[in-house]
Length: 110
Image 1: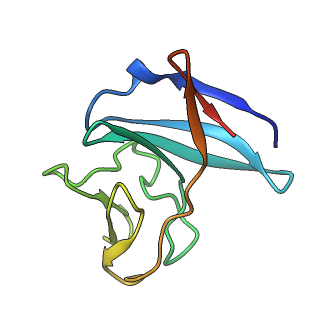
Image 2: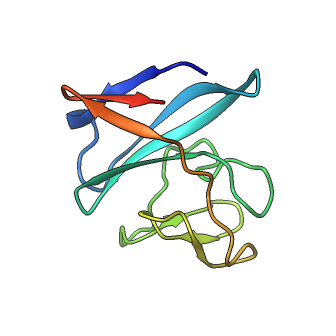
């Protein structure tokens, strides 16, 4: 996979997310970019319990209070900065992080 421009860094506000497509192992995949406590993070959009989208295609990744990511199907709760599941059927497992870099205000998937 080559470097892919995802978005402008300022496209994602604090507590906001943005989904994006990419290719993983020659197959289509989906990731999401989020800003939490001022940091941008990116993960594959796949729950660690069962291989389903966290947002169930709704575009909602954060819990209502905004402190964690939540799987809309299984209610698994993940820490935004580490991807670690802290509650739910996959407790102790982590979301697959995607390596990103901000260059001149653009966010790139590496």
